Amino acid sequence: MTLFFLILITSAIYVLFIYQNDAKNKNTNNTSGKCPNCGSAVESHFNVCPICKETLKTPCPACGEKLSVKWEYCPFCECNLKKNIK
Image 1 (cartoon, helix red, strand yellow):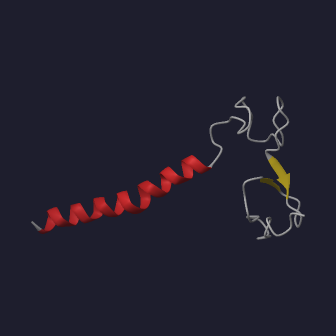
Image 2 (image 1 turned 90 degrees about the vertical axis):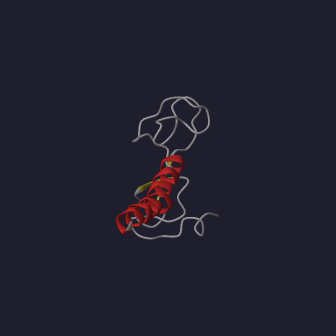
């Protein structure tokens, strides 16, 4: 009986924390290789879409690393990107 509850609790923790986090990350990242504007195929190193010229990446104002336009903070230098937009 104790083993059953242990398995049940472990399964609940997995579903509540790990599985839901993975699902959120898959939905927020542009891992599909498609432009968010026109849906054409783009590669991960593209800065703009070659079809509609939608900006996919922009340089960090502090360190110059290429970043997704959706990010609010630079993962390299911790710069607040939304604060630096004029």
